[in-house]
Length: 147
Image (cartoon, rainbow, N blue to C red; front, side, top):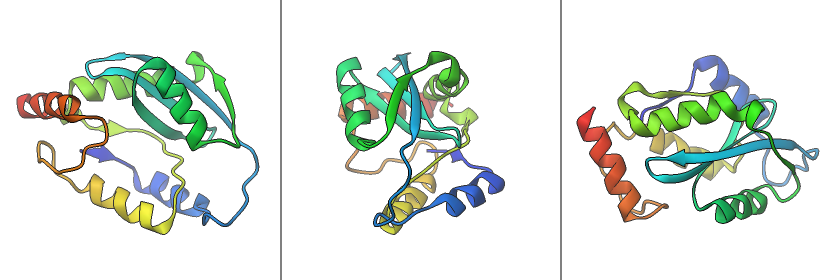
């Protein structure tokens, strides 16, 4: 996967981690969508960093984001998300270059362990149960093989 997170960002992510039972204030999440080699991509961010990267169709992406962040105020804002969205699209095209984004990750301790395992997958390695379909997984693997 080759997702790079700086140590400073990683420490701030851990500092912001809140167990699922804690009630957080309502966030404002800015998001934007664009086309990439795998289809439509949505990138969403809070003031702290990227909180979601989703792949699918336009209507499904927004519904997925709303379901994941049901208590947040969702705002389409291409200006705030522009740089992050460009980095994600560039990463899809050239995965060997890596992806360095400020992240605002929220999840249970189990989800954190899963994310750490996913980050440890070497570029070009195959794992099972890919969420966005076999066709997109094959396209990602093809691009990684060219790196």
